[in-house]
Every structure is written in structure tokens, then in C-alpha cells.
Length: 306
Image (cartoon, one colour):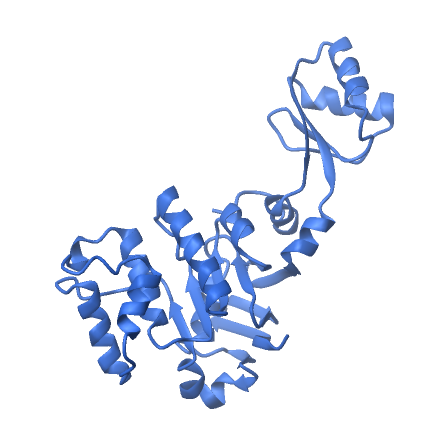
């Protein structure tokens, strides 16, 4: 596969503050690339550089194998994007909004508006003014606008922001359909780990402006380790017993009585008996494996992503 996006040592500074720090990332043709990071990690700044809204302080961007700095106008014709909240004329309908955009872009392709509205499920909203749309409907209209010119690359910055669970599910279905049926390469930024885990084929994890990891999500899943999870009344005492009675050192304490044991698979019964014998209440025992959230937490040093 060929690289659709290739950045090399991409950096953006605002005075002394470094927002994006030496980022070299690759998004290949056909991928749904989940660009993960906490709010403020530098995701939006990176995306704004990718679509030419701001210039890098240093480093380079190639899209479709060409320099964005040298061929920006030609390259942007092949990209659709939503960066932050899409804006519309609220006193117009969805189709009228798209007609304005089509005229500005000089588009004359027959049925392009109708096709875009059908893809995002707004084809029947013929009379409703955009001012009365929900946030989810506006996000979908934003994607319709991004699809008007049949882009080869779609860049979406936090498209699920503010959506309810049904809206998030609809957005996920729409994005996977676009990738599968239109063969569009998609870069989607998010701080919602569970959503990216269900959606992306590849991920990049950005933290404090630095790209900490790039990986095929399936390879990452194969790398994940299985563990036995104990919820106990006293995790400090339980940890001491693990080391004393079983010689277990490959475990993690996650607070609130939660222990994950990565060795001694199949010995949870013996471990449970030792805990109970030493007056530790065992509230839960579960077999599981590391998920994307665990990978993220280990890379960025704990805490939540939101």
C-alpha cells in the first residue's frame, strides 16, 4: 500500500510553547487511522496543518506522495475534512447549504448533492432548516459537505463530540461504510478510546504533542496479554500475599481494590483461597485481556483520556 499521509518531524510552536513536537506519522491507502489523544494533546493542531489551515514551524507534510507546501491547492481538491464544529447557514435547508458550497467550489456534477445527503441519511430532510437540526444532524451534514467533491481522503476532527450513544453508533456505521464502499482513506481524531477500538484499522497515540505509538490495531490486539482480575477488599494486603505465597511479581494494582495478575493463569482458585483464608473479601474474579485503554494508559503514564 502507498502512503496517503506522510509527515516527517512535524513541529508547531506558538512562542515558547510546543503544540506538536517532531511528529512522523504514516497513514496508508485504505486505512481508517484513529488519531488518539487527550484533549489538548495536539490532535487538532496536527489536523489543521494537514489541511493547510496553519503552517508548520518545521518538518514536512506529504499527501498522495506530494509536498503539501508546494502543491497545496491541487492536494486539497482531493481531501474532505471536518475541523472542529462545522458551520452552516441556519436559515437554509441542508440541500440549500450544499448548493452554496457546490457553487463556491465550481461543482457541476449531477446528483452529487443528493448522493452526499443519502450517504449521511439526510435525504428526506427536504424542508427542515438547519437551525433546527440537532448536533448529530449537523455533524452528518458536515460529512455530506466534505463528501461533495468525491474526496480520496477524509479527515475528521472529533466527529462524535457531543453526540449521544445512538448518534455515535450512526457515525461509526457511516464511517465504516465510506471506507468499505467508497474506498476512502480516513483519518479520525478522537479522545473516545472505545469508539476508536470499534472503528479504526490503525492507530496513532499523541501525548503532549509527541507521537508515542503507531500500530495496526489487529497486531496490537495480538500483543495484548491475558490476565486474571481480582476485586478485593484490601489490595495492599492482597498484593503482599501474591508475592509471599505464589512468588507473583507480574501484576498491576489499579486502585479501589482492583488487581490484575498476568502470570499463574488457571490458579485463580488457589489465589482466592489464600485471600479468603487471610480475611480478604473477594468481590469479583474475571478473566480478561488488555484493551486499547490499557495500552493508552501505559504509554501516557496513567489517568483518563478525556
